[in-house]
Length: 88
Image (tube, rainbow, N blue to C red; front, side, top):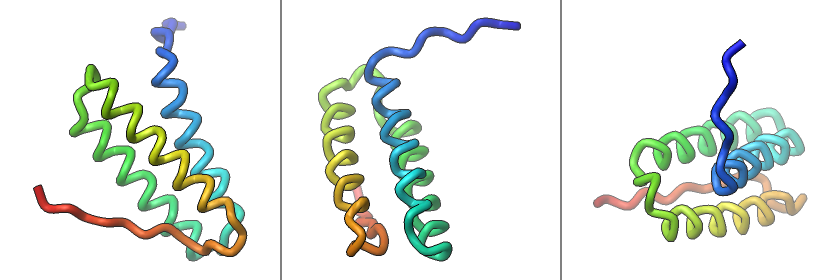
C-alpha cells in the first residue's frame, strides 16, 4: 500500500470546509441538496484548477469567504446557495 503525502494545514482546512458544505447540504430538501452539492463541487473544482497553489493570501481569503457562506447556509431559514459569475 502506497503512503499518501501528508497534507498541509491549509489543505486540511480546504477539505474540512468542503466536507462541512456537504454535511450541511444534507440538512436541506433533496432538490436543494443536489443543487448545493453541484454548486459547491463546481466552485471547489474551479478554484483548484485556476488558483495558484502558492498564492496563500488568496487561498486564505477564499477559506474565510467559504466559512462565512457555510455559517449562513447552516441557518435553517436559508434554503440554498446562490452563485455570482464574474467575467474576467
